[in-house]
Length: 204
Image (tube, rainbow, N blue to C red; front, side, top):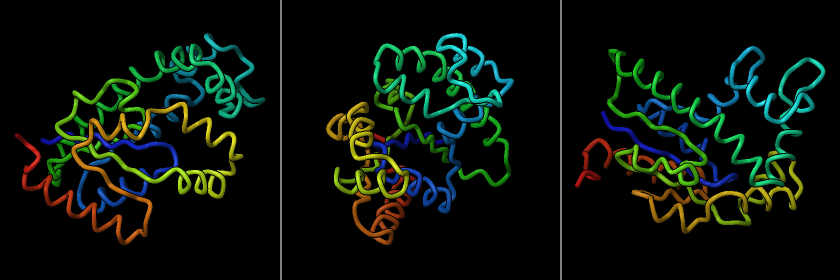
């Protein structure tokens, strides 16, 4: 089995690349999706987050108000670290469980790609055989965050600044996918990477 890490800054189009890799046959484990599941009412992780940050982060239905929590953590690195200390270990544990189940499938391709936005920031690079970094230039990312996610430019810049730099991600990359251009260009790059993964050419 080959375990590949996939990461990229907010607005880089990492989810698009994950979809392309899935189309090639990779099993995708989406850390963001797992995190959202762990924040559903009744989950132990949500209970611990509420205990740490208070009931004001819940809406009237008892569900997590993500915008309120985001305001807290993006303005306060200590609060962000406290949240990460609760959520990230639980996400990793769930990821291991999904990977174990995937390997039992008859049509398993042999490749698991873990989509982890904060792979560099959380020091998980060593868990993977290789790392794919999705890159897009700053203006493209800002345009996407404002147009597609409804953020203000100030909020978008703050989110980008809270993450690892392009240089930090590039330093751990086995491959870099430049997603600043057309979808066709990105897909061509992804197919080339998939061919290399299949050929095991990244293994020293």
